[in-house]
Image (tube, rainbow, N blue to C red; front, side, top):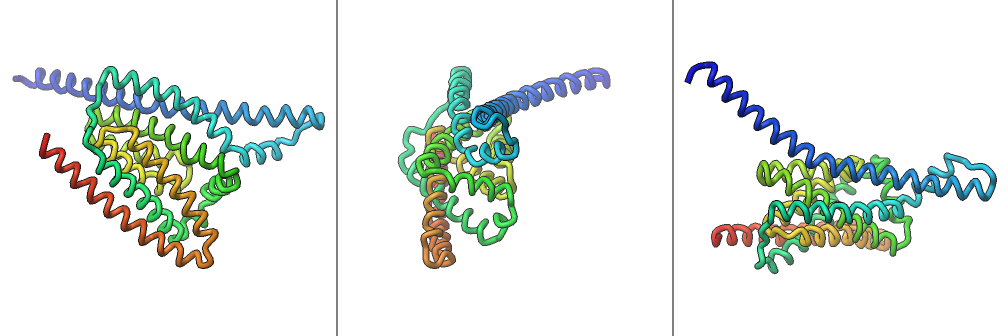
Length: 288
């Protein structure tokens, strides 16, 4: 083979690699852009509703007050965004599954229990460590979001933060992004890309760390079980545990001791859950 043939072969290989890369990149970016676009449109409509109400009431409107009201009630608009996005993401995943069927591990009862234990454990452990590190105290964006959630009615917190939010995020980050990257490049690239995007979309440093680390756990569980339902339930359980933890620390006479107890419980659940998950996944690999 002469130099010209080598150059032609290399050019063809490069074109194939780049075409695959750009196709994969586009396939994971457009659902994210669509989600952000839906959120933007819903926020605009939400703002316009307040403008219209103020104008009808007073004949004028104060934009700064309106933006403050929109921020305070942003959990409601997040719920609307989640409902719309869920429908679209389910359609996308069904289309993907028809083209690329995914095998599921039917013998996953122990993996499911272990995964839920690990999810609660990771949630408790991360929350206590982030709180103790002082990072959250100086993260203004995180505190704004936390105040919005805790200041909302309990029903709204559960509906949006525990049910709709996790469902939407798992459909997007595990069901679409991870699956598409993993299909073309394998587990590790899929894990890294999906967890980094998952963390980044939360919009602040504290939640980036928290969400990215939890994302690793959710992705691993999805990978070994093949069940998107499992990662969705894990995410819901973790968010519920976070709300319960906040309630416990607020009600506790000594929040420091309460956090220490929660940390011990969290580490125990995380270690036990991960141990079972890893052992069961290795056992299933040997059988296959």
